Amino acid sequence: MAIVNSTSTNQAEYMARDEGASQGKAEPFFLAYPVYRLWRQMLDEIDLVRLDLPVRGLSPAHRGLKVCQLSDLHVDRDEDLERLERAVSRVNHERPALVFLTGDYFSEPPAMRRYLAPLARALARLSPAVAAFAIPGNHDNWCSFAPIAEQFAKAGIAPLRNQHRRISFDGHPLVVVGVDDLMTRRADPNGAFRGVRPHECTIVLAHNPDTALYLRHLRPGVVLSGHTHGGAIRFPLLGSPLRSILKLGPKYYAGLNRFEDFHVYTNRGLGTFCVRIRINCRPEVSSFTLTPFEPSTTATPA
Image (spheres, one colour):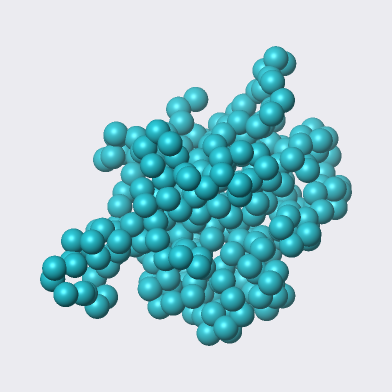
């Protein structure tokens, strides 16, 4: 299994950055330009992260399947919408079978009212070979997910709220499970898995990585999350200075991590919330190639 994260030195193969992402934006007085340029790069240059995603119970028929994830769009300004449109192009270039959206599409109700229609139009351009699915995040429940889900459905994206969908590939089912948000107390993992047979392979969408604590008994194949924005600020060796976002621990703020006998992947997100800053933690588009994972019988519980 080859796992590549966004800090790989093999930039040409595993990472693409968005050149010219800050074109067309007002620029400050020339003495402050270097600082401004760095700030804009961290906000606007999108990392395309490609990696093998280990999935417990994956059928040989699903090995090599390409799927993509977008998370934490936070479309609150025109520049956020522009960033999303570039991310959609990146996803389409990967030609995935499935696309997963893991929550927080806006930060507040005024932004939702202003940008819901343009966001839906941008997402309607997604062209997965099979299907696209979306779950709510905490901000979506605070804004009201119902109108978002309605627009997503019109755009060809299936909203999942404590629900699952079974997809057949050459007669072999793969189950996409969408769990509602944990922070807003809407998560119901048991309800989402109701009707999923024990032997079936599942890809679980759960906005908050901590949801893994409450669905591990359901034997997920893998969990795809967001919520943390990667910690927003990441220092070499030290990681993020934020230490209290997750019960799982700070290593789950970003990237692929094993939890007990399955893996959790945390996407760094596209947008920002509250403080418009990123340090060594650029926006992310995730591109996964599914690969089987058989947990060791000697795995140590977290």
